[in-house]
Image (tube, rainbow, N blue to C red):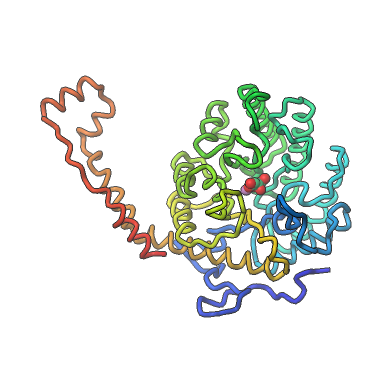
Length: 433
Ligand code: XUL
Ligand code: CO
Protein backbone atom coordinates (compact mmCIF):
# COMPACT_ATOMS: atom_id res chain seq x y z
CA UNK A 1 0.00 0.00 0.00
CA UNK A 2 1.54 3.27 -1.15
CA UNK A 3 0.76 6.62 0.45
CA UNK A 4 2.12 8.28 -2.71
CA UNK A 5 -0.35 6.60 -5.06
CA UNK A 6 -1.76 9.61 -6.84
CA UNK A 7 1.54 11.47 -7.08
CA UNK A 8 3.55 11.41 -10.29
CA UNK A 9 7.33 11.91 -10.47
CA UNK A 10 8.48 15.50 -9.87
CA UNK A 11 9.76 17.11 -13.06
CA UNK A 12 11.67 20.29 -13.77
CA UNK A 13 9.23 22.91 -15.07
CA UNK A 14 11.23 26.11 -14.70
CA UNK A 15 10.80 29.19 -12.52
CA UNK A 16 7.51 30.30 -14.09
CA UNK A 17 5.59 27.12 -13.28
CA UNK A 18 3.25 27.29 -10.28
CA UNK A 19 2.96 23.51 -9.84
CA UNK A 20 3.65 22.99 -6.11
CA UNK A 21 5.13 19.52 -6.64
CA UNK A 22 7.42 20.42 -9.57
CA UNK A 23 11.00 21.65 -9.57
CA UNK A 24 11.40 25.30 -10.47
CA UNK A 25 15.19 25.55 -10.08
CA UNK A 26 16.52 22.01 -9.78
CA UNK A 27 17.09 20.64 -13.24
CA UNK A 28 19.22 17.57 -12.49
CA UNK A 29 20.94 17.65 -15.90
CA UNK A 30 21.77 21.36 -15.91
CA UNK A 31 25.52 21.81 -16.21
CA UNK A 32 27.21 24.11 -13.72
CA UNK A 33 31.00 24.53 -13.70
CA UNK A 34 31.36 21.45 -15.89
CA UNK A 35 29.22 19.12 -13.78
CA UNK A 36 25.48 18.36 -13.64
CA UNK A 37 23.48 19.73 -10.71
CA UNK A 38 22.64 16.16 -9.77
CA UNK A 39 26.35 15.29 -9.45
CA UNK A 40 27.19 18.49 -7.61
CA UNK A 41 24.44 18.29 -5.02
CA UNK A 42 24.26 14.51 -4.51
CA UNK A 43 20.93 14.70 -2.65
CA UNK A 44 19.97 12.13 -0.03
CA UNK A 45 16.72 11.55 1.87
CA UNK A 46 17.03 10.82 5.60
CA UNK A 47 15.00 7.66 6.24
CA UNK A 48 14.50 8.50 9.91
CA UNK A 49 12.74 11.86 9.58
CA UNK A 50 10.55 10.95 6.62
CA UNK A 51 9.59 7.36 7.47
CA UNK A 52 10.47 6.47 11.08
CA UNK A 53 9.63 9.68 12.97
CA UNK A 54 5.93 9.71 13.86
CA UNK A 55 5.40 13.42 14.54
CA UNK A 56 5.87 13.46 18.32
CA UNK A 57 7.28 16.38 20.32
CA UNK A 58 8.17 16.71 24.03
CA UNK A 59 4.54 17.51 24.79
CA UNK A 60 2.63 15.09 22.63
CA UNK A 61 2.81 11.79 20.79
CA UNK A 62 2.46 10.89 17.17
CA UNK A 63 0.42 12.98 14.78
CA UNK A 64 1.12 11.09 11.54
CA UNK A 65 -0.86 8.10 10.42
CA UNK A 66 1.10 5.81 8.11
CA UNK A 67 0.15 2.29 7.06
CA UNK A 68 3.51 0.95 8.39
CA UNK A 69 2.68 1.84 12.02
CA UNK A 70 3.26 0.31 14.55
CA UNK A 71 6.89 -0.06 13.47
CA UNK A 72 7.46 -3.27 15.41
CA UNK A 73 7.19 -6.00 12.77
CA UNK A 74 9.20 -7.06 9.75
CA UNK A 75 6.05 -6.85 7.66
CA UNK A 76 5.65 -3.15 8.45
CA UNK A 77 9.39 -2.54 7.98
CA UNK A 78 9.02 -3.87 4.43
CA UNK A 79 5.93 -1.76 3.77
CA UNK A 80 7.91 1.26 5.01
CA UNK A 81 10.75 0.39 2.62
CA UNK A 82 8.30 0.07 -0.30
CA UNK A 83 6.98 3.55 0.44
CA UNK A 84 10.46 5.00 0.96
CA UNK A 85 11.62 3.78 -2.45
CA UNK A 86 8.42 5.06 -3.99
CA UNK A 87 9.21 8.53 -2.63
CA UNK A 88 12.87 8.37 -3.73
CA UNK A 89 11.64 7.55 -7.22
CA UNK A 90 9.14 10.42 -7.28
CA UNK A 91 11.83 12.85 -6.18
CA UNK A 92 14.57 11.44 -8.39
CA UNK A 93 17.08 11.59 -5.52
CA UNK A 94 20.27 9.62 -6.10
CA UNK A 95 20.82 8.61 -2.43
CA UNK A 96 19.29 7.92 0.96
CA UNK A 97 20.71 7.51 4.49
CA UNK A 98 19.63 5.40 7.46
CA UNK A 99 20.13 4.44 11.09
CA UNK A 100 19.73 0.70 11.76
CA UNK A 101 16.60 1.28 13.85
CA UNK A 102 14.90 3.21 11.02
CA UNK A 103 15.01 0.12 8.83
CA UNK A 104 14.30 -2.76 11.18
CA UNK A 105 11.94 -3.44 14.08
CA UNK A 106 13.59 -3.05 17.51
CA UNK A 107 14.10 -6.41 19.21
CA UNK A 108 16.33 -6.01 22.24
CA UNK A 109 18.98 -8.68 21.91
CA UNK A 110 21.97 -7.90 19.71
CA UNK A 111 21.65 -11.18 17.81
CA UNK A 112 18.00 -10.41 16.95
CA UNK A 113 18.88 -6.86 15.87
CA UNK A 114 21.68 -8.12 13.63
CA UNK A 115 19.47 -10.72 12.00
CA UNK A 116 16.54 -8.33 11.33
CA UNK A 117 19.00 -5.78 9.91
CA UNK A 118 20.28 -8.49 7.63
CA UNK A 119 16.78 -9.46 6.56
CA UNK A 120 15.66 -5.90 5.79
CA UNK A 121 18.87 -5.05 3.91
CA UNK A 122 18.32 -8.21 1.84
CA UNK A 123 14.91 -6.77 1.01
CA UNK A 124 16.28 -3.29 0.20
CA UNK A 125 19.34 -4.31 -1.85
CA UNK A 126 17.38 -5.38 -4.97
CA UNK A 127 15.31 -2.17 -4.78
CA UNK A 128 18.54 -0.18 -4.89
CA UNK A 129 19.75 -2.27 -7.77
CA UNK A 130 16.52 -1.82 -9.69
CA UNK A 131 16.17 1.95 -9.15
CA UNK A 132 19.86 2.91 -9.16
CA UNK A 133 19.38 4.69 -5.83
CA UNK A 134 22.50 4.51 -3.71
CA UNK A 135 23.33 4.71 -0.03
CA UNK A 136 25.10 7.98 0.90
CA UNK A 137 25.71 6.73 4.43
CA UNK A 138 24.62 4.33 7.10
CA UNK A 139 24.84 4.84 10.84
CA UNK A 140 23.85 3.24 14.14
CA UNK A 141 21.26 4.84 16.38
CA UNK A 142 23.00 4.80 19.75
CA UNK A 143 20.92 7.44 21.48
CA UNK A 144 17.24 6.40 21.58
CA UNK A 145 17.28 3.13 23.54
CA UNK A 146 17.51 3.55 27.34
CA UNK A 147 20.66 1.42 27.43
CA UNK A 148 22.45 4.41 25.88
CA UNK A 149 21.18 7.05 28.32
CA UNK A 150 24.70 7.60 29.73
CA UNK A 151 26.46 7.29 26.39
CA UNK A 152 27.50 4.52 24.01
CA UNK A 153 31.30 4.51 23.58
CA UNK A 154 31.60 6.84 26.59
CA UNK A 155 29.27 4.91 28.90
CA UNK A 156 30.72 4.19 32.36
CA UNK A 157 29.39 0.63 31.96
CA UNK A 158 31.72 -1.51 29.80
CA UNK A 159 28.77 -3.72 28.78
CA UNK A 160 27.23 -0.74 26.98
CA UNK A 161 30.55 -0.08 25.23
CA UNK A 162 30.47 -3.72 24.10
CA UNK A 163 26.86 -3.54 22.90
CA UNK A 164 27.64 -0.31 21.01
CA UNK A 165 30.76 -1.82 19.40
CA UNK A 166 28.80 -4.88 18.26
CA UNK A 167 26.04 -2.63 16.91
CA UNK A 168 28.46 -0.45 14.92
CA UNK A 169 30.12 -3.56 13.52
CA UNK A 170 26.74 -4.81 12.25
CA UNK A 171 25.88 -1.39 10.79
CA UNK A 172 29.25 -1.14 9.01
CA UNK A 173 28.64 -4.60 7.57
CA UNK A 174 25.20 -3.47 6.35
CA UNK A 175 26.65 -0.24 4.90
CA UNK A 176 29.27 -2.23 3.00
CA UNK A 177 26.63 -4.67 1.80
CA UNK A 178 24.53 -1.81 0.35
CA UNK A 179 27.53 -0.10 -1.26
CA UNK A 180 27.47 2.92 1.11
CA UNK A 181 29.68 5.90 0.25
CA UNK A 182 30.31 6.85 3.89
CA UNK A 183 29.74 5.63 7.43
CA UNK A 184 28.67 8.27 10.01
CA UNK A 185 29.02 8.42 13.78
CA UNK A 186 27.08 11.11 15.58
CA UNK A 187 27.56 11.08 19.34
CA UNK A 188 24.34 12.51 20.70
CA UNK A 189 24.86 10.84 24.08
CA UNK A 190 28.67 11.01 24.02
CA UNK A 191 28.88 13.83 26.53
CA UNK A 192 27.40 14.55 29.93
CA UNK A 193 24.58 16.01 31.97
CA UNK A 194 26.71 16.79 35.04
CA UNK A 195 30.46 16.72 35.63
CA UNK A 196 29.74 15.43 39.15
CA UNK A 197 29.21 11.92 37.76
CA UNK A 198 31.51 12.17 34.73
CA UNK A 199 35.20 11.52 34.15
CA UNK A 200 35.55 13.40 30.90
CA UNK A 201 39.19 12.46 30.36
CA UNK A 202 38.49 8.73 30.57
CA UNK A 203 35.34 9.03 28.46
CA UNK A 204 37.17 10.79 25.63
CA UNK A 205 39.96 8.19 25.70
CA UNK A 206 37.30 5.49 25.32
CA UNK A 207 35.62 7.39 22.51
CA UNK A 208 38.93 7.60 20.66
CA UNK A 209 39.62 3.88 21.16
CA UNK A 210 36.15 3.09 19.85
CA UNK A 211 36.74 5.25 16.78
CA UNK A 212 40.13 3.63 16.17
CA UNK A 213 38.43 0.22 16.22
CA UNK A 214 35.90 1.52 13.68
CA UNK A 215 38.78 2.59 11.42
CA UNK A 216 40.55 -0.78 11.87
CA UNK A 217 37.36 -2.65 11.07
CA UNK A 218 36.78 -0.54 7.97
CA UNK A 219 40.15 -1.66 6.61
CA UNK A 220 39.61 -5.25 7.71
CA UNK A 221 36.36 -5.62 5.75
CA UNK A 222 37.59 -3.58 2.78
CA UNK A 223 35.05 -0.77 3.14
CA UNK A 224 36.22 1.95 0.75
CA UNK A 225 33.84 4.63 2.03
CA UNK A 226 34.78 7.52 4.27
CA UNK A 227 34.29 7.43 8.06
CA UNK A 228 32.66 10.64 9.26
CA UNK A 229 31.89 12.14 12.66
CA UNK A 230 29.15 14.73 13.01
CA UNK A 231 29.74 17.75 15.25
CA UNK A 232 26.98 19.02 17.54
CA UNK A 233 27.40 21.00 20.77
CA UNK A 234 24.38 19.78 22.76
CA UNK A 235 20.93 18.19 22.53
CA UNK A 236 20.26 15.55 23.69
CA UNK A 237 23.33 15.77 26.00
CA UNK A 238 23.88 19.02 27.87
CA UNK A 239 27.44 18.98 26.56
CA UNK A 240 28.68 16.83 23.67
CA UNK A 241 32.34 15.98 23.13
CA UNK A 242 32.04 16.51 19.37
CA UNK A 243 31.03 20.14 20.03
CA UNK A 244 31.91 21.77 16.67
CA UNK A 245 34.29 21.45 13.73
CA UNK A 246 37.27 22.91 15.61
CA UNK A 247 36.72 20.63 18.62
CA UNK A 248 36.38 17.54 16.43
CA UNK A 249 39.56 18.35 14.51
CA UNK A 250 41.44 18.85 17.78
CA UNK A 251 40.10 15.53 19.10
CA UNK A 252 40.97 13.60 15.93
CA UNK A 253 44.49 15.06 15.86
CA UNK A 254 45.10 14.31 19.52
CA UNK A 255 44.37 10.63 18.90
CA UNK A 256 46.04 10.43 15.46
CA UNK A 257 42.78 9.84 13.57
CA UNK A 258 42.80 12.95 11.36
CA UNK A 259 43.78 11.08 8.20
CA UNK A 260 41.12 8.42 8.62
CA UNK A 261 38.06 10.36 9.76
CA UNK A 262 36.40 13.41 8.24
CA UNK A 263 33.34 15.45 9.14
CA UNK A 264 29.62 15.41 8.38
CA UNK A 265 28.60 19.01 9.01
CA UNK A 266 24.99 19.97 9.75
CA UNK A 267 23.51 23.44 9.31
CA UNK A 268 21.42 23.35 12.49
CA UNK A 269 24.29 22.03 14.60
CA UNK A 270 26.51 24.89 13.42
CA UNK A 271 23.90 27.37 14.61
CA UNK A 272 23.54 25.61 18.00
CA UNK A 273 27.32 25.90 18.41
CA UNK A 274 27.09 29.66 17.92
CA UNK A 275 28.59 29.57 14.43
CA UNK A 276 27.22 30.00 10.94
CA UNK A 277 27.07 27.03 8.55
CA UNK A 278 29.59 28.71 6.26
CA UNK A 279 31.99 29.19 9.16
CA UNK A 280 31.97 25.48 9.89
CA UNK A 281 32.35 24.62 6.19
CA UNK A 282 35.11 27.17 5.55
CA UNK A 283 37.03 25.86 8.57
CA UNK A 284 36.59 22.21 7.60
CA UNK A 285 37.60 22.80 3.98
CA UNK A 286 40.62 24.86 4.95
CA UNK A 287 41.76 21.91 7.08
CA UNK A 288 40.90 19.32 4.40
CA UNK A 289 38.31 17.76 6.70
CA UNK A 290 35.01 18.17 4.83
CA UNK A 291 33.19 14.91 4.23
CA UNK A 292 29.47 15.50 3.75
CA UNK A 293 26.67 17.83 4.84
CA UNK A 294 23.34 17.52 6.62
CA UNK A 295 21.17 20.23 5.15
CA UNK A 296 18.42 21.69 7.29
CA UNK A 297 17.72 24.80 9.35
CA UNK A 298 16.63 25.52 12.87
CA UNK A 299 13.94 27.91 13.94
CA UNK A 300 15.94 31.06 14.66
CA UNK A 301 13.92 32.09 17.69
CA UNK A 302 13.45 28.83 19.60
CA UNK A 303 17.09 27.78 20.11
CA UNK A 304 16.20 24.11 19.50
CA UNK A 305 17.39 21.65 16.90
CA UNK A 306 14.14 21.82 14.95
CA UNK A 307 15.50 20.10 11.80
CA UNK A 308 13.39 22.04 9.31
CA UNK A 309 13.79 21.85 5.57
CA UNK A 310 16.07 24.61 4.23
CA UNK A 311 14.44 27.67 2.68
CA UNK A 312 17.00 30.44 3.03
CA UNK A 313 18.74 30.79 -0.33
CA UNK A 314 21.46 33.34 0.66
CA UNK A 315 22.53 31.11 3.57
CA UNK A 316 22.60 27.98 1.42
CA UNK A 317 24.49 29.86 -1.32
CA UNK A 318 27.31 30.78 1.06
CA UNK A 319 27.49 27.19 2.28
CA UNK A 320 27.93 25.85 -1.26
CA UNK A 321 30.34 28.68 -2.05
CA UNK A 322 32.88 27.20 0.39
CA UNK A 323 32.14 23.65 -0.73
CA UNK A 324 32.64 24.52 -4.42
CA UNK A 325 35.69 26.61 -3.64
CA UNK A 326 37.24 23.49 -2.10
CA UNK A 327 36.42 21.43 -5.22
CA UNK A 328 32.95 20.12 -4.27
CA UNK A 329 31.92 16.82 -2.74
CA UNK A 330 33.86 13.60 -3.24
CA UNK A 331 32.21 10.80 -1.23
CA UNK A 332 29.83 13.25 0.47
CA UNK A 333 26.56 14.84 -0.55
CA UNK A 334 23.57 16.88 0.62
CA UNK A 335 21.53 14.83 3.09
CA UNK A 336 18.18 16.35 4.09
CA UNK A 337 18.39 15.71 7.81
CA UNK A 338 15.06 17.50 8.00
CA UNK A 339 11.55 16.66 9.06
CA UNK A 340 8.07 17.93 8.38
CA UNK A 341 6.32 20.06 10.95
CA UNK A 342 4.05 17.76 12.95
CA UNK A 343 0.90 19.33 11.52
CA UNK A 344 1.98 18.47 7.96
CA UNK A 345 0.12 15.18 7.78
CA UNK A 346 -0.18 14.41 4.10
CA UNK A 347 1.98 12.40 1.73
CA UNK A 348 2.04 15.51 -0.52
CA UNK A 349 3.68 17.43 2.33
CA UNK A 350 6.65 15.04 2.23
CA UNK A 351 7.05 15.58 -1.50
CA UNK A 352 6.57 19.35 -1.33
CA UNK A 353 9.13 19.59 1.50
CA UNK A 354 11.82 17.74 -0.45
CA UNK A 355 11.05 19.35 -3.80
CA UNK A 356 11.22 22.80 -2.19
CA UNK A 357 14.44 21.97 -0.37
CA UNK A 358 16.04 20.64 -3.56
CA UNK A 359 15.04 23.85 -5.33
CA UNK A 360 16.54 25.98 -2.55
CA UNK A 361 19.80 24.02 -2.76
CA UNK A 362 19.87 24.28 -6.56
CA UNK A 363 19.40 28.05 -6.38
CA UNK A 364 22.07 28.28 -3.71
CA UNK A 365 24.55 26.18 -5.65
CA UNK A 366 23.99 28.07 -8.90
CA UNK A 367 24.46 31.38 -7.07
CA UNK A 368 27.61 30.03 -5.44
CA UNK A 369 29.01 28.92 -8.79
CA UNK A 370 28.25 32.35 -10.28
CA UNK A 371 30.00 34.02 -7.33
CA UNK A 372 33.05 31.89 -7.91
CA UNK A 373 33.04 32.44 -11.65
CA UNK A 374 32.41 36.19 -11.19
CA UNK A 375 35.58 36.16 -9.12
CA UNK A 376 35.00 39.50 -7.31
CA UNK A 377 35.04 37.93 -3.85
CA UNK A 378 38.21 36.00 -4.55
CA UNK A 379 39.87 39.06 -6.07
CA UNK A 380 38.95 41.16 -3.04
CA UNK A 381 40.37 38.48 -0.76
CA UNK A 382 43.66 38.25 -2.68
CA UNK A 383 43.88 42.02 -2.71
CA UNK A 384 43.43 42.16 1.07
CA UNK A 385 46.37 39.83 1.68
CA UNK A 386 48.50 41.06 -1.23
CA UNK A 387 51.02 42.69 1.13
CA UNK A 388 52.12 39.22 2.17
CA UNK A 389 53.42 38.48 -1.32
CA UNK A 390 56.46 40.71 -0.86
CA UNK A 391 59.83 39.11 -0.05
CA UNK A 392 60.16 41.16 3.12
CA UNK A 393 56.80 39.99 4.43
CA UNK A 394 57.58 36.36 3.62
CA UNK A 395 61.04 36.58 5.18
CA UNK A 396 59.43 37.80 8.40
CA UNK A 397 57.61 34.47 8.80
CA UNK A 398 60.94 32.65 9.20
CA UNK A 399 62.60 35.34 11.24
CA UNK A 400 62.30 36.25 14.96
CA UNK A 401 60.92 38.95 17.22
CA UNK A 402 64.35 40.65 17.67
CA UNK A 403 65.01 41.16 13.98
CA UNK A 404 61.42 42.19 13.29
CA UNK A 405 61.61 44.79 16.05
CA UNK A 406 64.90 46.10 14.61
CA UNK A 407 63.33 46.46 11.16
CA UNK A 408 60.30 48.29 12.57
CA UNK A 409 62.74 50.76 14.18
CA UNK A 410 65.05 51.03 11.13
CA UNK A 411 62.23 51.55 8.64
CA UNK A 412 60.05 53.49 11.07
CA UNK A 413 57.07 51.26 10.20
CA UNK A 414 53.73 52.90 11.03
CA UNK A 415 50.84 50.72 9.81
CA UNK A 416 48.10 52.58 7.98
CA UNK A 417 44.63 50.95 8.59
CA UNK A 418 42.72 49.94 5.44
CA UNK A 419 38.98 49.37 5.03
CA UNK A 420 37.69 45.81 5.41
CA UNK A 421 34.92 46.75 2.93
CA UNK A 422 32.38 44.39 4.48
CA UNK A 423 29.29 46.15 3.11
CA UNK A 424 30.71 46.27 -0.41
CA UNK A 425 31.41 42.53 -0.23
CA UNK A 426 27.92 41.82 1.12
CA UNK A 427 26.51 43.80 -1.79
CA UNK A 428 28.43 41.57 -4.19
CA UNK A 429 26.92 38.45 -2.61
CA UNK A 430 23.49 40.03 -2.80
CA UNK A 431 23.87 40.56 -6.57
CA UNK A 432 24.16 36.79 -7.02
CA UNK A 433 21.39 35.58 -4.74
C1 XUL B 1 20.93 14.58 15.24
C2 XUL B 1 21.42 14.27 13.90
C3 XUL B 1 21.41 12.83 13.52
C4 XUL B 1 22.62 12.42 12.75
C5 XUL B 1 22.69 10.94 12.50
O1 XUL B 1 20.88 15.91 15.54
O2 XUL B 1 21.75 15.14 13.13
O3 XUL B 1 20.25 12.59 12.81
O4 XUL B 1 22.67 13.06 11.51
O5 XUL B 1 22.64 10.20 13.66
CO1 CO C 1 22.49 15.12 11.20
